[in-house]
Length: 491
Image (cartoon, rainbow, N blue to C red; front, side, top):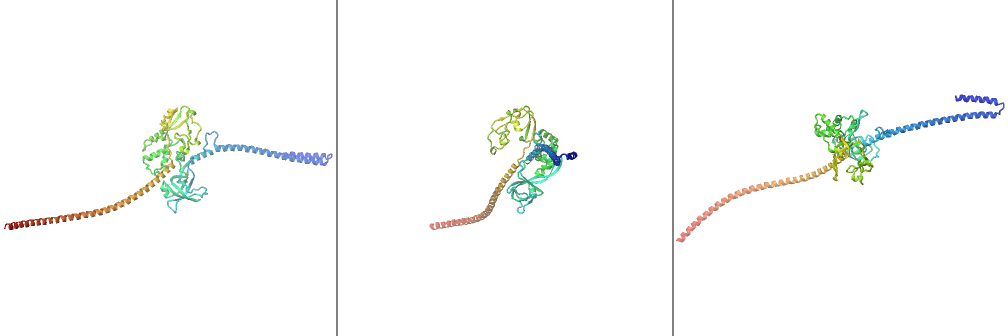
Protein backbone atom coordinates (compact mmCIF):
# COMPACT_ATOMS: atom_id res chain seq x y z
CA UNK A 1 0.00 0.00 0.00
CA UNK A 2 2.81 2.40 0.90
CA UNK A 3 4.53 1.72 -2.39
CA UNK A 4 1.31 2.54 -4.34
CA UNK A 5 0.99 5.87 -2.54
CA UNK A 6 4.65 6.70 -3.18
CA UNK A 7 4.20 5.75 -6.87
CA UNK A 8 1.12 7.93 -7.15
CA UNK A 9 2.93 10.85 -5.55
CA UNK A 10 5.87 10.35 -7.90
CA UNK A 11 3.53 10.39 -10.93
CA UNK A 12 1.89 13.60 -9.65
CA UNK A 13 5.37 15.06 -9.14
CA UNK A 14 6.33 14.24 -12.73
CA UNK A 15 3.11 15.79 -14.05
CA UNK A 16 3.73 18.86 -11.95
CA UNK A 17 7.33 19.07 -13.24
CA UNK A 18 6.15 18.81 -16.86
CA UNK A 19 3.58 21.55 -16.30
CA UNK A 20 6.12 23.81 -14.58
CA UNK A 21 8.79 23.26 -17.22
CA UNK A 22 7.42 26.30 -19.09
CA UNK A 23 8.20 28.66 -16.23
CA UNK A 24 10.83 26.82 -14.07
CA UNK A 25 14.42 26.25 -14.82
CA UNK A 26 15.34 22.61 -15.27
CA UNK A 27 17.70 22.83 -12.30
CA UNK A 28 14.79 23.58 -9.99
CA UNK A 29 12.80 20.71 -11.41
CA UNK A 30 15.72 18.25 -10.97
CA UNK A 31 16.31 19.55 -7.47
CA UNK A 32 12.64 19.06 -6.63
CA UNK A 33 12.67 15.50 -7.95
CA UNK A 34 15.91 14.71 -6.12
CA UNK A 35 14.49 16.24 -2.95
CA UNK A 36 11.39 14.07 -3.26
CA UNK A 37 13.51 10.95 -3.78
CA UNK A 38 15.77 11.85 -0.84
CA UNK A 39 12.75 12.51 1.34
CA UNK A 40 11.19 9.21 0.37
CA UNK A 41 14.45 7.35 1.09
CA UNK A 42 14.93 9.18 4.41
CA UNK A 43 11.33 8.52 5.40
CA UNK A 44 11.74 4.82 4.54
CA UNK A 45 14.97 4.59 6.51
CA UNK A 46 13.41 6.40 9.45
CA UNK A 47 10.38 4.12 9.34
CA UNK A 48 12.62 1.05 9.18
CA UNK A 49 14.67 2.40 12.11
CA UNK A 50 11.54 3.06 14.14
CA UNK A 51 10.25 -0.42 13.29
CA UNK A 52 13.49 -2.03 14.43
CA UNK A 53 13.44 0.08 17.59
CA UNK A 54 9.85 -0.97 18.26
CA UNK A 55 10.69 -4.63 17.75
CA UNK A 56 13.82 -4.27 19.88
CA UNK A 57 11.80 -2.68 22.67
CA UNK A 58 9.18 -5.41 22.42
CA UNK A 59 11.98 -8.03 22.52
CA UNK A 60 13.53 -6.27 25.51
CA UNK A 61 10.22 -6.19 27.33
CA UNK A 62 9.64 -9.86 26.48
CA UNK A 63 13.19 -10.70 27.61
CA UNK A 64 12.69 -8.80 30.86
CA UNK A 65 9.39 -10.59 31.47
CA UNK A 66 11.03 -13.92 30.63
CA UNK A 67 13.94 -13.03 32.89
CA UNK A 68 11.55 -12.27 35.72
CA UNK A 69 9.74 -15.56 35.11
CA UNK A 70 13.02 -17.44 34.88
CA UNK A 71 14.25 -15.73 38.05
CA UNK A 72 11.07 -16.72 39.87
CA UNK A 73 11.35 -20.25 38.50
CA UNK A 74 15.04 -20.33 39.45
CA UNK A 75 14.24 -19.13 42.97
CA UNK A 76 11.54 -21.78 43.27
CA UNK A 77 13.94 -24.41 41.90
CA UNK A 78 16.70 -23.33 44.28
CA UNK A 79 14.79 -22.26 47.42
CA UNK A 80 11.31 -23.71 46.96
CA UNK A 81 7.97 -22.01 47.44
CA UNK A 82 7.89 -18.61 49.13
CA UNK A 83 5.07 -19.80 51.38
CA UNK A 84 7.00 -22.82 52.67
CA UNK A 85 8.44 -22.58 56.18
CA UNK A 86 11.38 -24.80 55.19
CA UNK A 87 13.03 -25.96 52.00
CA UNK A 88 10.83 -28.12 49.78
CA UNK A 89 11.98 -31.64 49.07
CA UNK A 90 11.95 -30.83 45.30
CA UNK A 91 14.09 -27.68 45.41
CA UNK A 92 17.86 -27.58 45.11
CA UNK A 93 18.48 -26.46 48.69
CA UNK A 94 16.09 -29.11 50.00
CA UNK A 95 17.77 -31.82 47.95
CA UNK A 96 21.20 -30.53 48.98
CA UNK A 97 20.07 -30.47 52.61
CA UNK A 98 18.78 -34.01 52.33
CA UNK A 99 21.97 -35.10 50.56
CA UNK A 100 24.02 -33.47 53.31
CA UNK A 101 22.09 -35.43 55.93
CA UNK A 102 22.56 -38.59 53.91
CA UNK A 103 26.30 -38.02 53.54
CA UNK A 104 26.87 -36.74 57.09
CA UNK A 105 29.79 -38.54 58.63
CA UNK A 106 30.28 -40.71 55.57
CA UNK A 107 33.30 -39.11 53.97
CA UNK A 108 34.50 -40.12 50.51
CA UNK A 109 33.41 -43.41 48.97
CA UNK A 110 35.09 -45.46 46.26
CA UNK A 111 32.44 -47.82 44.92
CA UNK A 112 32.18 -50.99 42.87
CA UNK A 113 35.82 -51.99 42.71
CA UNK A 114 36.89 -55.54 41.91
CA UNK A 115 39.06 -57.25 44.53
CA UNK A 116 41.67 -59.98 44.17
CA UNK A 117 44.18 -61.62 46.48
CA UNK A 118 47.59 -59.96 46.31
CA UNK A 119 50.10 -62.21 44.52
CA UNK A 120 52.97 -61.24 46.82
CA UNK A 121 51.12 -61.67 50.14
CA UNK A 122 47.90 -63.64 50.40
CA UNK A 123 46.89 -61.60 53.46
CA UNK A 124 46.63 -58.41 51.41
CA UNK A 125 43.99 -57.52 48.81
CA UNK A 126 44.17 -55.51 45.58
CA UNK A 127 41.27 -53.14 44.89
CA UNK A 128 40.85 -52.19 41.21
CA UNK A 129 38.79 -49.08 40.41
CA UNK A 130 36.05 -49.27 37.74
CA UNK A 131 37.91 -46.47 35.94
CA UNK A 132 41.38 -45.05 36.49
CA UNK A 133 41.35 -42.01 38.77
CA UNK A 134 43.34 -38.80 38.37
CA UNK A 135 45.48 -39.43 41.47
CA UNK A 136 44.67 -36.01 42.92
CA UNK A 137 43.83 -37.69 46.22
CA UNK A 138 46.82 -39.21 48.00
CA UNK A 139 45.55 -42.39 49.65
CA UNK A 140 48.88 -43.75 50.84
CA UNK A 141 48.55 -44.82 54.49
CA UNK A 142 44.81 -44.05 54.58
CA UNK A 143 42.59 -46.32 56.67
CA UNK A 144 39.43 -47.33 54.80
CA UNK A 145 36.36 -49.39 55.69
CA UNK A 146 35.48 -52.13 53.19
CA UNK A 147 31.96 -53.31 52.39
CA UNK A 148 30.63 -55.97 50.02
CA UNK A 149 28.26 -54.59 47.39
CA UNK A 150 24.91 -56.22 46.75
CA UNK A 151 21.60 -55.58 44.98
CA UNK A 152 18.95 -53.77 47.00
CA UNK A 153 15.31 -53.25 45.99
CA UNK A 154 14.67 -49.51 46.38
CA UNK A 155 11.18 -47.96 46.26
CA UNK A 156 11.29 -44.82 44.05
CA UNK A 157 8.06 -42.95 43.27
CA UNK A 158 5.99 -46.03 43.93
CA UNK A 159 8.12 -48.28 41.72
CA UNK A 160 10.70 -50.79 42.93
CA UNK A 161 14.14 -50.57 41.33
CA UNK A 162 17.17 -52.74 42.03
CA UNK A 163 20.33 -50.82 42.79
CA UNK A 164 23.78 -51.81 44.04
CA UNK A 165 24.76 -50.62 47.52
CA UNK A 166 27.28 -51.65 50.20
CA UNK A 167 25.43 -54.29 52.20
CA UNK A 168 27.95 -56.16 54.41
CA UNK A 169 30.91 -54.90 56.44
CA UNK A 170 34.16 -56.78 55.82
CA UNK A 171 36.72 -54.98 57.92
CA UNK A 172 39.26 -52.18 58.15
CA UNK A 173 42.23 -51.93 55.79
CA UNK A 174 45.24 -49.67 55.34
CA UNK A 175 46.36 -48.53 51.89
CA UNK A 176 50.00 -49.59 51.60
CA UNK A 177 50.42 -48.91 47.88
CA UNK A 178 48.39 -46.94 45.34
CA UNK A 179 48.23 -46.44 41.60
CA UNK A 180 45.82 -44.70 39.26
CA UNK A 181 43.78 -47.85 38.74
CA UNK A 182 44.27 -49.91 41.91
CA UNK A 183 45.11 -49.96 45.60
CA UNK A 184 46.96 -52.48 47.74
CA UNK A 185 45.14 -53.05 51.03
CA UNK A 186 46.62 -54.44 54.23
CA UNK A 187 44.10 -55.85 56.75
CA UNK A 188 43.87 -54.19 60.17
CA UNK A 189 40.65 -55.64 61.55
CA UNK A 190 38.57 -58.35 59.83
CA UNK A 191 34.94 -58.56 60.95
CA UNK A 192 33.73 -61.00 58.29
CA UNK A 193 36.24 -63.61 57.17
CA UNK A 194 34.06 -65.15 54.45
CA UNK A 195 34.13 -62.32 51.85
CA UNK A 196 37.67 -61.46 52.89
CA UNK A 197 38.94 -65.00 52.31
CA UNK A 198 37.05 -65.44 49.03
CA UNK A 199 36.43 -61.99 47.48
CA UNK A 200 33.45 -62.11 45.11
CA UNK A 201 31.58 -59.38 43.27
CA UNK A 202 32.59 -55.80 44.01
CA UNK A 203 33.63 -53.90 47.13
CA UNK A 204 33.11 -50.31 48.26
CA UNK A 205 35.70 -48.45 50.32
CA UNK A 206 34.57 -45.70 52.71
CA UNK A 207 36.76 -43.06 54.24
CA UNK A 208 34.66 -43.07 57.42
CA UNK A 209 32.55 -45.68 59.13
CA UNK A 210 28.83 -45.05 58.41
CA UNK A 211 26.70 -43.78 61.26
CA UNK A 212 23.74 -45.62 62.74
CA UNK A 213 20.42 -44.14 61.56
CA UNK A 214 16.84 -44.79 62.56
CA UNK A 215 15.38 -44.34 59.08
CA UNK A 216 17.95 -46.35 57.11
CA UNK A 217 15.87 -49.45 56.42
CA UNK A 218 12.57 -47.59 56.33
CA UNK A 219 13.81 -45.12 53.74
CA UNK A 220 15.14 -47.81 51.43
CA UNK A 221 11.87 -49.73 51.66
CA UNK A 222 9.73 -46.61 51.20
CA UNK A 223 7.98 -47.13 54.56
CA UNK A 224 8.19 -43.56 55.85
CA UNK A 225 4.51 -42.60 55.53
CA UNK A 226 1.72 -42.45 58.05
CA UNK A 227 0.46 -45.88 56.93
CA UNK A 228 3.47 -47.58 58.51
CA UNK A 229 2.95 -51.34 58.85
CA UNK A 230 4.89 -52.60 61.86
CA UNK A 231 4.41 -56.29 61.04
CA UNK A 232 5.57 -55.82 57.42
CA UNK A 233 8.60 -53.80 58.52
CA UNK A 234 9.53 -56.46 61.05
CA UNK A 235 9.35 -59.14 58.34
CA UNK A 236 11.65 -57.03 56.14
CA UNK A 237 14.19 -56.83 58.97
CA UNK A 238 14.06 -60.58 59.64
CA UNK A 239 14.18 -61.73 56.03
CA UNK A 240 16.36 -59.07 54.40
CA UNK A 241 18.52 -56.79 56.52
CA UNK A 242 19.03 -58.48 59.91
CA UNK A 243 19.04 -62.14 58.97
CA UNK A 244 19.98 -64.44 61.83
CA UNK A 245 22.44 -66.37 59.66
CA UNK A 246 24.34 -63.16 58.82
CA UNK A 247 24.38 -61.90 62.39
CA UNK A 248 25.36 -65.31 63.74
CA UNK A 249 22.40 -65.79 66.07
CA UNK A 250 19.80 -68.48 66.55
CA UNK A 251 16.58 -67.35 64.80
CA UNK A 252 14.50 -69.12 67.46
CA UNK A 253 16.27 -67.48 70.40
CA UNK A 254 14.89 -64.79 72.68
CA UNK A 255 18.02 -62.69 72.12
CA UNK A 256 17.45 -62.51 68.34
CA UNK A 257 13.79 -61.63 68.82
CA UNK A 258 14.76 -58.85 71.24
CA UNK A 259 17.28 -57.50 68.71
CA UNK A 260 14.66 -57.36 65.96
CA UNK A 261 12.24 -55.71 68.38
CA UNK A 262 14.69 -52.89 69.11
CA UNK A 263 14.94 -51.96 65.43
CA UNK A 264 11.29 -52.62 64.56
CA UNK A 265 9.81 -50.72 67.53
CA UNK A 266 12.11 -47.71 67.13
CA UNK A 267 10.00 -44.54 67.20
CA UNK A 268 6.76 -46.35 68.05
CA UNK A 269 4.44 -45.62 70.95
CA UNK A 270 4.66 -48.00 73.87
CA UNK A 271 0.91 -48.60 73.67
CA UNK A 272 1.15 -49.61 70.01
CA UNK A 273 4.09 -51.87 70.84
CA UNK A 274 2.13 -53.63 73.59
CA UNK A 275 -0.87 -54.03 71.26
CA UNK A 276 1.34 -55.50 68.55
CA UNK A 277 2.96 -57.98 70.97
CA UNK A 278 -0.43 -59.10 72.27
CA UNK A 279 -1.63 -59.70 68.71
CA UNK A 280 1.32 -61.97 67.80
CA UNK A 281 1.21 -65.70 68.41
CA UNK A 282 4.25 -67.81 69.19
CA UNK A 283 6.42 -64.99 70.53
CA UNK A 284 9.21 -65.86 72.94
CA UNK A 285 9.29 -62.48 74.69
CA UNK A 286 5.79 -61.61 75.85
CA UNK A 287 6.78 -58.09 76.94
CA UNK A 288 9.06 -55.34 75.69
CA UNK A 289 10.98 -53.50 78.37
CA UNK A 290 13.33 -50.82 76.96
CA UNK A 291 16.02 -49.10 78.97
CA UNK A 292 14.95 -45.93 80.81
CA UNK A 293 17.24 -43.88 78.57
CA UNK A 294 15.24 -45.04 75.55
CA UNK A 295 11.78 -44.09 76.84
CA UNK A 296 10.56 -40.56 76.06
CA UNK A 297 7.43 -38.86 77.39
CA UNK A 298 5.34 -36.69 75.07
CA UNK A 299 4.04 -33.64 76.91
CA UNK A 300 1.62 -30.95 75.67
CA UNK A 301 1.85 -27.46 77.17
CA UNK A 302 -1.45 -26.41 78.71
CA UNK A 303 -0.25 -22.81 78.98
CA UNK A 304 2.34 -20.78 77.13
CA UNK A 305 5.84 -20.57 78.60
CA UNK A 306 7.31 -17.13 78.00
CA UNK A 307 10.92 -16.60 77.01
CA UNK A 308 11.78 -15.17 80.42
CA UNK A 309 10.65 -18.43 82.02
CA UNK A 310 11.85 -20.59 79.14
CA UNK A 311 14.67 -23.06 78.76
CA UNK A 312 18.30 -21.95 78.70
CA UNK A 313 19.95 -23.86 75.84
CA UNK A 314 23.15 -21.79 75.46
CA UNK A 315 26.08 -22.48 77.77
CA UNK A 316 26.73 -19.27 79.67
CA UNK A 317 30.18 -20.11 80.96
CA UNK A 318 33.55 -19.95 79.25
CA UNK A 319 33.48 -23.52 78.03
CA UNK A 320 35.85 -24.98 75.47
CA UNK A 321 34.86 -27.62 72.97
CA UNK A 322 38.19 -29.46 73.24
CA UNK A 323 37.77 -29.74 77.02
CA UNK A 324 34.02 -29.70 77.72
CA UNK A 325 32.72 -31.21 74.51
CA UNK A 326 29.92 -29.92 72.29
CA UNK A 327 27.36 -29.93 75.12
CA UNK A 328 27.64 -29.33 78.86
CA UNK A 329 26.48 -31.95 81.43
CA UNK A 330 23.14 -30.10 81.56
CA UNK A 331 22.71 -30.35 77.79
CA UNK A 332 23.52 -26.71 77.01
CA UNK A 333 25.39 -25.95 73.80
CA UNK A 334 29.06 -25.12 74.33
CA UNK A 335 29.80 -24.69 70.63
CA UNK A 336 29.08 -21.03 69.67
CA UNK A 337 27.82 -22.21 66.28
CA UNK A 338 24.94 -23.95 68.08
CA UNK A 339 23.94 -20.99 70.24
CA UNK A 340 20.36 -19.77 69.82
CA UNK A 341 20.94 -16.42 71.50
CA UNK A 342 17.82 -16.62 73.63
CA UNK A 343 15.80 -18.90 75.84
CA UNK A 344 13.38 -21.35 74.27
CA UNK A 345 9.72 -20.52 74.79
CA UNK A 346 6.70 -22.72 74.10
CA UNK A 347 3.20 -21.74 73.08
CA UNK A 348 0.04 -23.34 74.34
CA UNK A 349 -0.51 -26.67 72.60
CA UNK A 350 3.16 -27.26 71.72
CA UNK A 351 4.37 -30.81 72.26
CA UNK A 352 7.84 -31.83 73.44
CA UNK A 353 9.74 -35.08 73.98
CA UNK A 354 11.29 -35.48 77.44
CA UNK A 355 13.48 -38.39 78.47
CA UNK A 356 12.17 -40.60 81.25
CA UNK A 357 14.83 -39.51 83.76
CA UNK A 358 13.91 -35.84 83.40
CA UNK A 359 10.21 -36.63 83.24
CA UNK A 360 10.26 -38.53 86.55
CA UNK A 361 12.71 -36.17 88.25
CA UNK A 362 16.21 -36.79 89.57
CA UNK A 363 18.94 -35.31 91.72
CA UNK A 364 21.87 -33.53 90.12
CA UNK A 365 25.46 -34.31 91.02
CA UNK A 366 25.65 -31.09 93.02
CA UNK A 367 22.72 -32.27 95.16
CA UNK A 368 20.06 -30.08 93.56
CA UNK A 369 16.78 -32.03 93.34
CA UNK A 370 14.71 -31.70 90.16
CA UNK A 371 11.04 -32.61 90.59
CA UNK A 372 8.92 -34.28 87.98
CA UNK A 373 8.55 -32.37 84.74
CA UNK A 374 4.77 -32.02 84.97
CA UNK A 375 5.21 -30.44 88.42
CA UNK A 376 7.57 -27.79 87.11
CA UNK A 377 5.62 -26.80 83.99
CA UNK A 378 1.94 -26.68 82.99
CA UNK A 379 1.93 -29.78 80.80
CA UNK A 380 -0.15 -32.88 80.24
CA UNK A 381 1.32 -36.26 79.35
CA UNK A 382 0.14 -37.32 75.89
CA UNK A 383 2.07 -40.50 75.16
CA UNK A 384 5.26 -42.46 75.69
CA UNK A 385 7.56 -43.39 72.82
CA UNK A 386 10.45 -45.83 72.49
CA UNK A 387 13.46 -44.26 70.74
CA UNK A 388 16.35 -46.65 70.20
CA UNK A 389 19.74 -45.53 71.40
CA UNK A 390 21.93 -45.27 68.31
CA UNK A 391 25.11 -47.29 68.01
CA UNK A 392 28.39 -45.43 67.64
CA UNK A 393 29.92 -47.76 65.05
CA UNK A 394 33.28 -45.94 64.79
CA UNK A 395 33.63 -46.05 68.59
CA UNK A 396 32.53 -49.70 68.71
CA UNK A 397 35.01 -50.58 65.97
CA UNK A 398 37.79 -48.66 67.70
CA UNK A 399 36.92 -50.44 70.94
CA UNK A 400 36.97 -53.81 69.22
CA UNK A 401 40.30 -52.95 67.62
CA UNK A 402 41.67 -51.92 71.03
CA UNK A 403 40.35 -55.12 72.57
CA UNK A 404 41.90 -57.06 69.73
CA UNK A 405 45.24 -55.42 70.43
CA UNK A 406 44.86 -56.12 74.15
CA UNK A 407 43.87 -59.70 73.37
CA UNK A 408 46.87 -60.02 71.05
CA UNK A 409 49.20 -58.74 73.76
CA UNK A 410 47.56 -61.08 76.26
CA UNK A 411 47.98 -63.93 73.80
CA UNK A 412 51.66 -63.04 73.38
CA UNK A 413 52.07 -62.85 77.16
CA UNK A 414 50.27 -66.16 77.63
CA UNK A 415 52.36 -67.68 74.84
CA UNK A 416 55.51 -66.51 76.64
CA UNK A 417 54.12 -67.81 79.92
CA UNK A 418 53.23 -71.08 78.23
CA UNK A 419 56.74 -71.28 76.82
CA UNK A 420 58.21 -70.62 80.25
CA UNK A 421 55.79 -73.06 81.85
CA UNK A 422 56.57 -75.62 79.16
CA UNK A 423 60.31 -75.24 79.85
CA UNK A 424 59.67 -75.53 83.57
CA UNK A 425 57.49 -78.56 82.93
CA UNK A 426 60.24 -80.11 80.81
CA UNK A 427 62.76 -79.43 83.55
CA UNK A 428 60.36 -80.87 86.09
CA UNK A 429 59.94 -83.96 83.91
CA UNK A 430 63.70 -84.30 83.70
CA UNK A 431 63.97 -83.84 87.45
CA UNK A 432 61.22 -86.43 87.91
CA UNK A 433 63.17 -88.80 85.70
CA UNK A 434 66.33 -88.22 87.75
CA UNK A 435 64.33 -88.56 90.96
CA UNK A 436 62.75 -91.80 89.72
CA UNK A 437 66.20 -93.12 88.81
CA UNK A 438 67.50 -92.20 92.24
CA UNK A 439 64.44 -93.67 93.88
CA UNK A 440 65.01 -96.87 91.97
CA UNK A 441 68.65 -96.81 93.01
CA UNK A 442 67.68 -96.09 96.62
CA UNK A 443 65.13 -98.91 96.50
CA UNK A 444 67.82 -101.19 95.14
CA UNK A 445 70.21 -100.00 97.85
CA UNK A 446 67.50 -100.64 100.43
CA UNK A 447 66.96 -104.13 99.06
CA UNK A 448 70.71 -104.73 99.17
CA UNK A 449 70.86 -103.36 102.68
CA UNK A 450 68.02 -105.63 103.74
CA UNK A 451 69.78 -108.60 102.17
CA UNK A 452 73.03 -107.58 103.85
CA UNK A 453 71.17 -107.14 107.12
CA UNK A 454 69.64 -110.56 106.77
CA UNK A 455 73.03 -112.05 106.02
CA UNK A 456 74.54 -110.12 108.90
CA UNK A 457 71.78 -111.35 111.18
CA UNK A 458 72.38 -114.94 110.01
CA UNK A 459 76.14 -114.52 110.48
CA UNK A 460 75.56 -112.84 113.83
CA UNK A 461 73.43 -115.81 114.90
CA UNK A 462 76.11 -118.20 113.73
CA UNK A 463 78.80 -116.21 115.51
CA UNK A 464 76.63 -116.01 118.63
CA UNK A 465 76.18 -119.76 118.62
CA UNK A 466 79.89 -120.26 118.03
CA UNK A 467 80.58 -117.74 120.81
CA UNK A 468 78.20 -119.60 123.12
CA UNK A 469 79.92 -122.84 122.25
CA UNK A 470 83.34 -121.29 122.86
CA UNK A 471 82.16 -119.79 126.15
CA UNK A 472 80.71 -123.15 127.16
CA UNK A 473 83.94 -124.81 126.20
CA UNK A 474 85.89 -122.17 128.11
CA UNK A 475 83.67 -122.70 131.17
CA UNK A 476 84.10 -126.42 130.84
CA UNK A 477 87.85 -126.01 130.48
CA UNK A 478 87.91 -123.56 133.40
CA UNK A 479 86.01 -126.14 135.47
CA UNK A 480 88.40 -128.82 134.51
CA UNK A 481 91.39 -126.56 135.18
CA UNK A 482 89.92 -125.51 138.48
CA UNK A 483 89.23 -129.11 139.44
CA UNK A 484 92.74 -130.07 138.38
CA UNK A 485 94.14 -127.13 140.33
CA UNK A 486 92.25 -128.09 143.47
CA UNK A 487 93.28 -131.68 142.99
CA UNK A 488 96.89 -130.69 142.62
CA UNK A 489 96.74 -128.30 145.51
CA UNK A 490 95.03 -130.88 147.67
CA UNK A 491 97.78 -133.33 147.08
